[in-house]
Every structure is written in structure tokens, then in C-alpha cells.
Image (cartoon, rainbow, N blue to C red; front, side):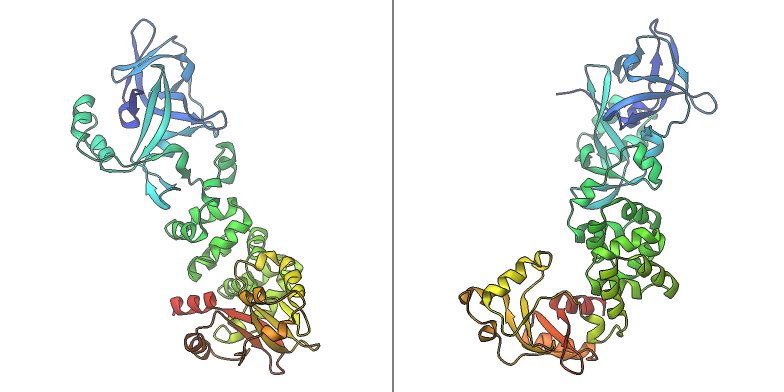
Length: 409
């Protein structure tokens, strides 16, 4: 088992030169993540106007008794944006526990001592043990404190499973801070984390993560926070995120913004999603037109099962949410709907019209929310087509859309 040390123990350790003379006490330690993400690279001694520093390769030994150096060459400390200082930049700061899917506050850091002379960060401590260490550090001997904490259950996060929240994009780059851990999380979990952060921290995450992940996450966030996030972002970044959202969700998000802000973002969006979102923004929020989305698959009512499968292959991005195919005539008017599962009951040459549901339920774009929710409840619907006054298919409302309405209500 590797010997270990805590940051609260490291701070205050006496530094000795090759002849055993005291050079000062440790006040901070720093990583250079671009070089090594876990090894302590620099040690800071002193304080005030007389900060000095030495490198990891100048260390002969590290223990609770102190740090002994191989030489006496300490140099004045100069601020370096490539350094992640553990006391200044990490202690008492909020970070994301990517495995536990929550925001936590750092109360200590645990190191392994490699070869007696090298410190590597292994865990971030967030529990009661570290609080005890901090309370009694400097009051009781370090070995006594270790004995006191033994009965307390450890609560820590592996260093590689943490995500540091750095607001400055340039410093984030210099520190090699990646948000890959956040991007791999379920959007709903990431949304919960985002809602627990400050506005500046939310902006930092949405500026840095992939636009597709940002879009999925934003769709899960409370509407008020959605608006705050979009308003904080550069217009181009906000537009990139909305381009990746379902048109109805993008329209809802824009609807929460001031008109000038909404218009500016909309103008930066790509042509196709911009057109779809503009159409949806024309409808009032509490109507079928305001609730519907225009991402659906419609086939001519003379189409066959083979045609349907070809259409599905051309709309792979919709497959996760698709449960119904719609049939229209030559004028675009809705004539039928076929549940996706029924495709497997027909032969390739089977006409889709023969698989359509009986008693097709539909609403017009002006139908109110309460009528829509009643229809979903009464008929156990998964999707509901929306038509204009002439019966032309305009969009579809899904069960997810209704659940969102009920949750916000």
C-alpha cells in the first residue's frame, strides 16, 4: 500500500535543504495538467511578497516530518496560468462529481507518495473526515488527527472522475480541463447538475461542451434557467445549440427570451431549423400549434411497407422518438396514421393504408392545451397529429410534450 498524505497535512510542512536547514513552510502545491494531470509539479513556500517555489524533481523525501530537498535552489514564484494551485484553485471550490452526478465542495485532497519523493493526487475529499482534519490541523499533532478520523467513513471522489469548473475559457485551455466526463452523462443528469450551479458556471459549461450535448441538456433544464443560459452565451454559440434542438423545443426556449435577444439568435441559426422554428413561433404557447413539433415522417397514402422502411432509413435521427407514421394525400392532407410496430405485420408490397388505425384522432393548430391533455389521457395516445383548418398535416404532439406541459403546470 502506497504511503499517503493529505493537502491539509502538506500545507505547513517544513522544507529542509541538503544540510538539514529550514527553508520555510509549504503554503501551496500545484499541478501542471498539460504535462501530467495528477503529479504535483511545483511546491510553493513562504507567502506574502516572498513566495518561493521548487520543482518535484528537487525533492529527496516527503513525509509527515517534512520535505527534504536534493538542492537549495528555490526561485521566486511568478504567476503561471498553466498551474493548477490546489489550495487556491481547488480547496473549498465547487466541482462536479461525474460518477455521483452531483456538485460537491472540495474540503481536502489525498495524495499517494510515490518512491518516497513524488506526490500524486488520487482523490478529492468531500466528507466529514476532511472536516475533522481541517478543524484540528495545527492544534493537534498530525498523527493524532489521523487516529481520530479512523472511525469516520471516508467520502471521496477519484481524481479522474472529477470535473473542475473553470470560467475563463483561455485558462480552461491552458489547464487542459476537459468536459468529456460531462458529455458522457445522461442529459437529464447533466441538467440537474447545471441547475445547481451559479450562472457563471453554467455559462462556462455550455460554452465548452459539444453543441449536440448542450442541446439535449438544455431541453431538460427549467425554462427560466434555459433563458438565463441562452442570454449569457455568445449569439453564435446559442444559435449552434438551438440548431441541434428539436424545433418545438428551440421555439419554446426562444419564446422565453426578450424579443431582441430571440431575434438575434434566430438570425444566426442555419436556414432549415430557422425556418421550422419561425413557423412554430407564430403559434401561441398554449395551443396545439405551440406544442407541436414538425419532426415526423409522412408518406403518400398509396405507399407500401417497403416505402415506409426506406423513409425510416432516411430519417435515422428521428428513430428514438418515432412511434407513428402518417399518411397524406397529394395535397398534403392527413388521411391516416400507422403505428410503427404494425410495419412488421405486413409484407414489403402491403399498402400502408391497410395498416392504418381506425378512428384517427387529430386536432387543429388552434386546439387548447386542456383539450390536448384530455385526448392523451382518454385514448392513451403516444402521439397526436396536428392539422390546419383545411386538414393539412402541420406537425405532431408527442406524449413527452404533454408530460412537459403537465410538469410545468
